[in-house]
Image (cartoon, rainbow, N blue to C red):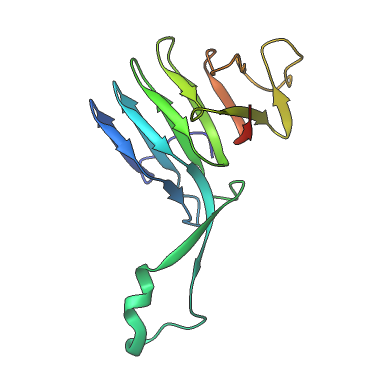
Length: 162
């Protein structure tokens, strides 16, 4: 799920400020690949479980097809790959589950004022001072995420009070 495939849903955002959530509730081995270039994004970016508000959809309620509730959860076969390139910042506003995160030297992951970001990799909290899971590359949380090249089967970020 951490590799990019030609059939994945991919988008690149350049020199833009975005506010909102990105969810991949698609099942069937399709990743959501988001690349940010000199951009800011504020919201949740996550694999999710998508659920319709009704149990059955037919011709009489076809409008329900696009109405789903996304609940952030670890990826099953719906990976989320995030690349924060030069000058980009992601402000995490809620728990987010990723399968790959790459952060350039001059990009950042941050929390809203009064909150902090906790990064876990395969269930183990990552920080700049402690041990790192042996199967991961460059995982660190030093106030903001400043190391890069996180590659894993499960990365999650959650908010806490400072």
